[in-house]
Length: 216
Length: 232
Image 1 (cartoon, rainbow over the protein chains, first blue to last red):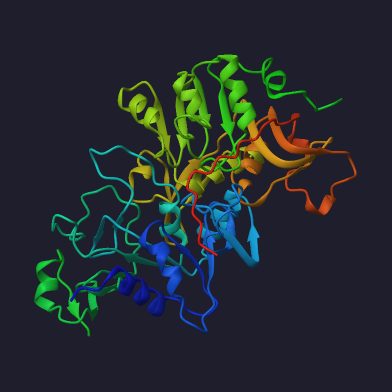
Image 2 (image 1 turned 60 degrees about the horizontal axis):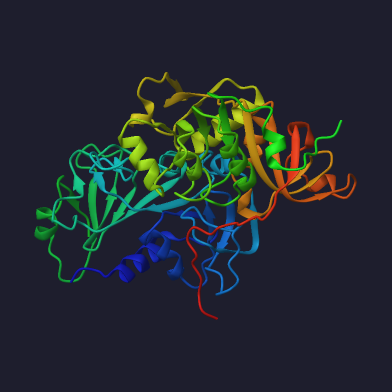
């Protein structure tokens, strides 16, 4: 059985969040990981438009147009949070002060190349802060479905879509398994470290472009 | 010499010209200079290069200057919320320079700080790096990015005193402080103007030295792009 979105988010939260971490979560499913912070673990969420200490959505009737996240959603700020301008925010990111970023992806290569900002032939909307995040954050985790809706591979030998960053991804969490990417490895850099119940290594082989080591 | 103007039109009308480069503060619709954008439309000025993280939506923010075809080129990091943008871009009417958000913010900061260019890891190995100087520092590859300056910056702050010292509010700060620095004609609209001596000097975000003209905005709409709430 493939993991549900909730289970994927739970795995990401349990495996990746460490007490005291400063974390940036991408738009979409990665944002949901914040709902599963393990008890006893305190993480501070950054939003790249300019705050640390992002809290939950405001109560109905209490939304403040001056307080939004990078996805342009109305949000709140927790006690202990802070506001700053966008150049300062990206100094935090580029300067390597954020411990972890969890992002979505269109394609990831076995070497950790990431494509997540545009599909050729479709309208170019822009990369926003994604290129800065993958270049600067200490650890980059991709959270995505293992294959595209039409069944094509998303974990590929070489990304066809324009890159967001080269050799930037440390781990991929999909609905079927978890891969670590060991960028210093001489053999295959992709390592299978966790499988969903009832999913076989053969199924992963069929649905994954590059070869990988099984280390479960 | 007073920096105070009665309204956005009088603050803009004698300084705008066709073909100018204008920076506009804001992230999405948050912290945008609503009144100055409207006034810019009324001047009818054309062929503008606009530097702003986004380009508003079809009927609000910078989007209204697309409707009147006043923008020739945008320098932005994300322009995905706008149908008119899409049409004008696909027809070749509108040029677009996409810049990663952090690189955009730093290019503007550098412009205001008198730094012509800097090196960054952001975008190495991607289309953003094409045609740019690459250089190694401590075994890592970086690309050179050049500073941005504008003829006019239009900025939104929350409070100002009559000396032009500014305080922003929450995430409405975003690109406004750097843009205030990156032009010699920075025009600021605020929600509240107070007497000199009222603001605590320790709490000032942008010192008045960067502010040439100042006005109190009218009828702020402060539109919300994505209202998200939870039940009590």
